[in-house]
Image (cartoon, rainbow, N blue to C red):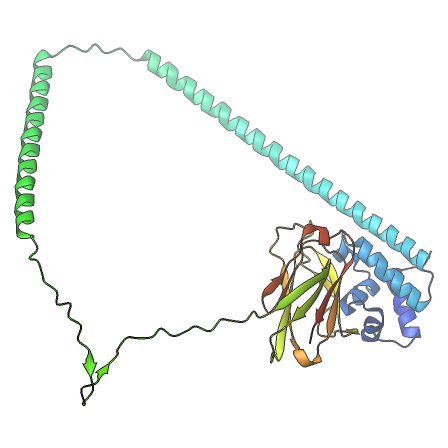
Length: 331
């Protein structure tokens, strides 16, 4: 078995006199990923083992190394990482269980203390002498008289308020009777100095109909042809990566250097299709553009736009494996 994967690949690259940038352009692997593989930072790509295996295999084939031996070594490393994570999770679970046990003990002690305090309070109450209350008829009669007087006052005040409000409302209605106004409907036409009548009727301006910004035809799943309005010098292409995926872009059959070949929407590890996604927008010169091909490592749920017009997709267009999105400009 080889000593380390990273050292072997780095030594092979240096023996071939190549830089990481040159290897990235030839193999279409991100420079960051090549550097991480040589530095064996595999813990960064947990749950992306399939992608890393493909990258290691591609590098091994290019350097003419034993790809199976490198892949076996990578498998051993991923198993160690997985065991380490399992051990870490077990330790965290043990710590959590200990804290819960301590909290339970404290809660139990508090409950015991409260129970003792309640018991003492109950004993003290039982020792108190019962008081005997005597009926005081005079006090009760006074209370009833006061209540009755308050009710009478409230009824009188309410009746007075309603009477006053009704009288005020009648006066207001009488004073607000509107005097009819006779409008002069005679049309007054404007005239010129020689007595000619000028038509002042305004003619509404016609709003020109807007031409559609993009016409498109769906040739097959994830394959579209578009046509732009005449005279359009530039247009924008936007893709929203919903699922977590590796992607690479070629324009007119050539790798597009302004588009990073890397993993997009890296935080969506569960590939939740309700995720807002990571948008990437590129502007092209219409005269220089013929076709683009977007290679997707995981095709589920992505959205595609031309000049903010969404190209329609449905579930049958997607699968769980790699796919190509094709866009052709009709001129």
